Length: 341
Image (cartoon, rainbow, N blue to C red; front, side, top):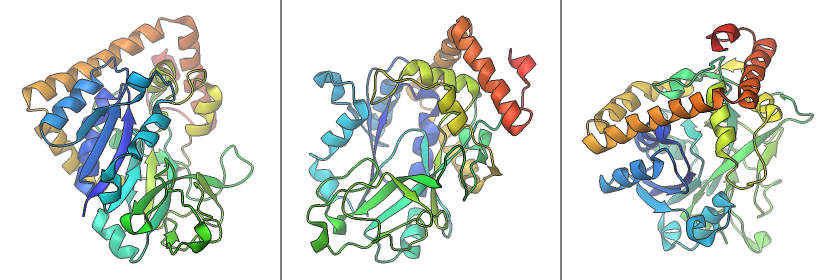
């Protein structure tokens, strides 16, 4: 089977090899990445991975249209690709999202075996917090951030709803592939089996339009979850804020965003069954002189980037607010607010 994923990226250099290695390991064999306006060498790393036959890299069409809705440009563009219709399964996901399959041995084939007959699988984001980490760190992100929101209940919301991404099969033949789920014409005449992360039908809420979230009792993490590392460390959060929003140039992450996504309600280590293999693959790729150099250069760039931000009074104040808010809500952090200051 051809399992195609489509992802936009900007300035994700230190995390690319882990992300690609993991998703190839679980069975996504056709990874397409679009980059735009990169400063840390992300585009060069993706080019080298393309040269090596590991992924496909393309410039985001926003680079020549001038449209600042970078993510939406990718979604619109990918729907012109004949490849999407020829792939057995299609998934749109972000660089801070990891498809974590809980069924069987955690690989794509295990998910298919657990959900025979499914045409669309809409699974839910599981937001991972900072785990009390304040500073950018080398090594696997999946090892650093193991604290997540609970599988049920709410956090800073009145109703329990969870974000959605979807795997769409060739059989479904949607009108368009959306960022969150496929979109269909004449839904009442469609014969599509649409299920949630437990393999249960969500026909009562799937009306053919794009589903961006599922509320209780329809969301589930029984067989699959989407690990969402929205903030990473407090320093990573400053960089994310400085980098800007992929769809809204006039919006930026703030304390409200940090408090929403720095959620650390449960220890969740599901994905770590693959950590050793991911690390080994990452090390193997870094033996390539060009790719290894680009990876190390990206990490240094981010370290210098945070150094500049920490010298900015407003950015430093935001950093300290993040650290102290985490300590107040979730207990002491790994490094300590005083040391981080």
